[in-house]
Length: 400
Length: 177
Image 1: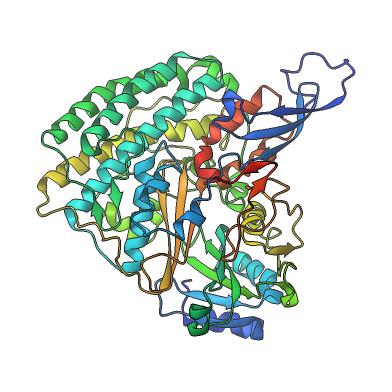
Image 2 (image 1 turned 135 degrees about the vertical axis):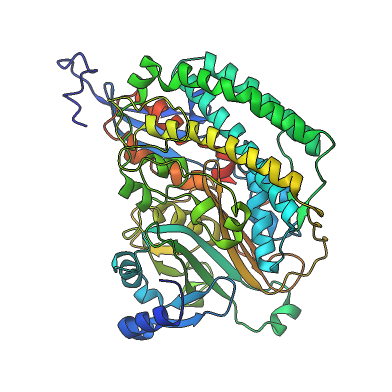
């Protein structure tokens, strides 16, 4: 974007000096302890250097000293807004190494909680993005609905944030009585509210002005930087691991009907009544990343509905968690899953004992936030929170 | 193209000795390459039609060292470091694992970090991943544009994911536990 032609810069004739501005690590719109060092000239950002590591807790080193089941709580604390998805990623990679298949009922239960958590994560992304841009109301609406999901999870496992529910081999306990009805009831309540979200933000004129055409990430660059999830799909790259991943993961979603949320030939999937794409929006900008997340809320609701029916119809149990002294065969396994914020990968190397030799977590936000300096170059200072917010990062996952 | 014998033959035909070995009968098949050939092989894997590994998912370092002398005597390997590259393609949807083996210290002089060429010129995403491996595992990536620590503070001493790492007792006057 040529800065001098930007209609939002109103005064050109003021002499300005280059200045370094420190933003964070305690800034409200950096979503945690991200620190950006901005090099500015007046209102224009010439460069942005992200600094991370303020929440580093040596999770990988700890993993070398614990049995896989004991490490589950540490995965909770990575993306703490989507702990179920983190648990799932870790459980699956351990099962992949052991070649241990989970019964059908357990499979549907995992889809059920993982997709519910995806909705919760996207609601937080939506609400806090409104906060970043100066709109307080959507945050309250988003948290109202998220609270109900947390209530559902509390009934399942007793925890509201760090669940440790999906463990290698199965889950810590089956669903309580009446839970399926509660969940179906919740979906009924959420359905009409989604239209409110769209009215509050997606099609709000001020919101469109703040996000459309801002922070454009071309698809090729997104792939080159390893960006994944809604950031990648918002740039028009058709990849969703629930469909394109390894069989060990996609087998969870066998028999489920869903369309990958991505703009193809100028159109998003038309299976619901979504607000139209505004004329100002450019593929790969902040608005598109936000829109993909909003559409994924509805998509996940559809998947949860299917999972409720499939779970109720499935016989048997949900699998047996492995024991702490379960010997891990020597070898290694790597698996990525589609977490709400992108592709979360776990890498496990074993030497034949019950404790892994090496544990590695590949964070989706880590790759997504590395593109910040590229996106912020040449933008206006006020656009920095809009760009960082649209990446939807969680520092617990970046720093591990 | 999947990581199978055909791909390995094709790579061997083109890069000869730079393809050190391949393990195809395992959960995630991998190809081990020599550090000298790494960048060329990566560029080939990214650009060659039919391969098009356009995304670098992850770079991990693995330290093979038994700190217990009894176990070290029984181990089937000499102490070494492995850098593992997990690649995938958004076009063909295939995945591939590359490995580079290096000594734990350059020319076995303790404290001199081993060197592996940087692939940040092939995939921009490698930039931060290599900084992380440098920070936590102590591998120097030659040709990296900005090799600094990323998760630990700049003045941190040592590389925590090494098996023989000893945490400092004090850091800026703050005592450990």
